[in-house]
Amino acid sequence: MEIDAEKHLQRKQSLYESLDEKFRIEKETYRGQQYSQIYFARLHMMRTLIYSLIPNWKPHLPVCTVLGLEEGKECIIVGTLYKHMKLKPCILDEYSKERSVAPLVKPHNFMHSDDSLVLEDESGRVKLGGTMLLPSVYVTGTVVGLHGKETSAGEFLVQDILDADLPPQIELPLKSREDKYVVFVSGLSVGSSTSNPLQFQLLVDHITGHLGDEKEQGIAAQIVHVVIAGNSVAVPRGLLNGQNLASKDQSRLSEPIKELDILLTQIAAGLPLDIMPGPDDPANFSLPQQPLHRCLFPGSSAYNSFRSCTNPHSFELENIRFLGTSGQNVDDLEKYSEAKDKLEFMERTLRWRHLAPTAPNTLGCYPFTDRDPFLIESCPHVYFVGNQDKYETRLIKGSEGQVVRLICIPKFCETGVAVVLNMRNLECHALSFGTEFSS
Amino acid sequence: MASGNMKGYFKQKKSGGGRGIAKPKPSKKSTKIQPTHVATLGSDVVQPSTLSAHNLQDDEYDGNETVLRQFDMNMAYGPCLGMSRLARWERAQRLGLNPPKEIETLLKQGKARADCLWDGCV
Image (cartoon, rainbow over all chains, first blue to last red):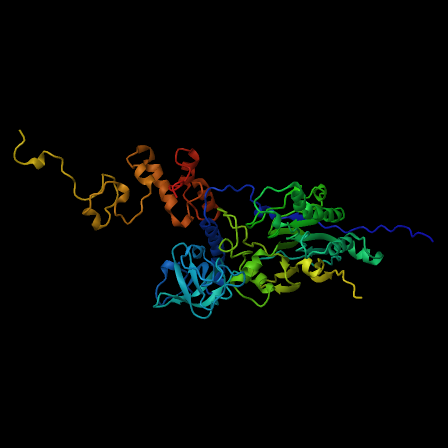
């Protein structure tokens, strides 16, 4: 039998630029500051922005501060929202002498029909009333503009709301591009009982072109980038009980990360790879999570195609701007507000121009003093969130022609699904791997 | 020989509190009590120990420090705790708040305290 002449399939390439600089905290020093600093920076930047939008919205109304409110006078106020929630766990409950049988913290949604909103700026705060502003939609930490007037009861009756809306976006060049794909995966959880090593190996083999015939390899050659959005490893936490670890346990502790490194080396050898830390990964807890250390990946970090990135992660591939997180921002929003699906939470964060409005209130965050790195200044073309329950995607449009592809990346260990995005037209499809064979 | 009015011999206690520190008279009730420490005065305003320690009679601190303290207390530039004065000035500059230039020159000269009033006390 003749051996076919080897056909070399060239993998396509894309120009990559990292925009993670603002999420790095190496240069920050902790000098005892509290979170008031980051809230001040957030309020100031957002307020300046909203003030610039008011002339296009309701130019005839005066703008005033919270303390400058006069009863009955219609005006516009801008400030940070605070949502008073009855069911939100409070640290003081742990110290209360009478403890009910019910557990102190319930992990699900903390909403209640009695929740109320308060608007706050440096001068003061005012309770918000009326039916226009729904407490179920908003969370503590969002900055909005409100049109209304003060009532005799001392409340501010809201008549209309001004959100910052989608930030300006750099237009995508219209020239026809070729098909180039980006693969998104998250929740690999290597080392956990729910993860299936064969499934992950299948994914790696498909991406690197080790599977299938020429046609399938040709498709794989069009994959230019892989993004792993958090929760890649499941450290066996049962071993960590405060005692010194026996050497046998020490090697058991590092097994999952070694296994992950072997598989990542296979990917990195073929194409550029970005790995982001997630809530279960060996990285810091508070946002922005810093990149996983290179020493955890002795094999893959030898390749310059391997990039350990922050969470949130922002980068540009051929002038298409990507922005994404490992899921903490949206999961926290789900605890304190409601929406019809996760994509709606994502859309809200874009329209509020803030990746994680609940930080630092209920989401751990570094106390920045001079800036709020979660403010979204330029609208991304692709916005992704990892570690979700199912694959969902939508294309949203802004009032100035912005177009954003929203992607919810499902947990791979539970669903076996990765997401593939075509950079030519921003279309998405799912790539699912199964290892069960029906008999 | 001491005769007649003994009261004149002994120093008279001043009615009302205070010990010669130039600060506004606190609420009425303090005139009846005879305080022994400044810090326990029935004052509405909570005075940190720094203010009483650094008397305004200290010439070194006078003009410059007062200006810097006013800068610290100004709400428009945000909270002052946890940041050096220069960093706070630079932040105000960057956010377009136009903080006075003299403060920057004062801080860069290095003669004044680099940290805000309450630093290390809270």
